[in-house]
Length: 593
Image (tube, rainbow, N blue to C red):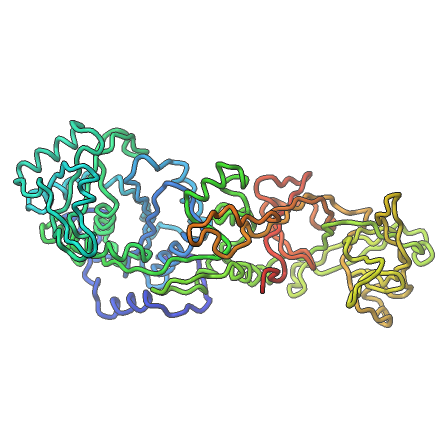
């Protein structure tokens, strides 16, 4: 009944795991029945005992692209269900017809599956839409009206807001609060039948206008919206409020543990009131779901506001929702982060009631931990300058090149070896040469020896400059009998080893060097303009070269460039004949203070 990828890594204890374990030990949901599909009390009453020990759900609203914060909720809900022999439902909270689109539905499903999770268990597909429950929600609203627990309010929004009171002042009852159930039912059906304009009236729960919890002061549960819905079309012109719809969705699906972020904590009393009331009216089954809140994942150097992310896209500050600098799941995926790394970061971040910040570096650490044992190695030169070996023919005769071997992965011999050629001219990094070296510089400068990795030791003899005084070529001589892997090759001691790519078999590539989008850990803290801390160096595009073992790579293939870090072939623009590599992260944190 697994709804999550296999993961043998140790799990940290947290209060949600403790709650689940307590409920399982006490048999809180042991007698719960599930008819194989969502439904009311009667629907589930005749069914068998639910084979799922617990049921959780991931319930996004399809009004935007998922981001790294959602990854925490995904891994938490699907992960708990998998750990404890349960099922996690994939559900769209699509109760707002004006902001929801099929594009977002498709992107969300793709993101959840890419992260490694599924919603099919025991042959049952647990993909649900809140809009499919509109009939029951309407029925529940009429039941509340009939019980004298809901009424149609025709005050203006400003009047309702003013009469709600505040933390120090009780609310004032609406002049429409004491209508009879018959009057309220008639008005509510007029709302349903499209006889009133948007905003003319709402249906409110009748609870307690003097409650210290303002959310219990007769909250609105239905509003008029003459708008086409992506799933139900124009069938409805009234739509349930999220706070009314969400607990009902949980109950119809027989969710046991409804896990959400802390901003919904104040809504829990209404969640409980509504489900208890509808259960007492015989509409919903017992035991009912319970809501638990955790602190959302906040990651430094990113923003997760959908409005601000959309602003970045609309103003073309980034190259779309899947720009590799974006914190969206599609952006992280295109950047090259792996599902395993994201899940690992979420687990390491922990789950608690206390808010806090997770450093962006933890995502890079998780990525390195994941790819260290997986990614093949290769040499690449990101800022090439030509190194000419002036005595090539004296050492190697007429041979145009010498074959070199290196392991595809230093700890995984089963991956084999990669082959490339050392020739009389090779590309090296421009900053691997200094005409006048700074203190502690052990790479190429006149008179110094270094090893060309997997190749030979060379001694720098100088450089060539153009008419503007710019260095355009570095000169060196091969030190004889220093070929890597041959007897006595290590007799010549050097302090520096540099990577290189032979000019004769180099593969030219486009390299997109991505970095953090913002320079401040909390770009929009205190209401400041988040665009003021945009990182001007968050994307640099350069032309470099890679060793021939990387020619013909498929898109979305990850590799470690020795010395430089982890890169991935771009999943959109990469082609075998026009290769494009994105930098995921370096081998160490360059942002550490």
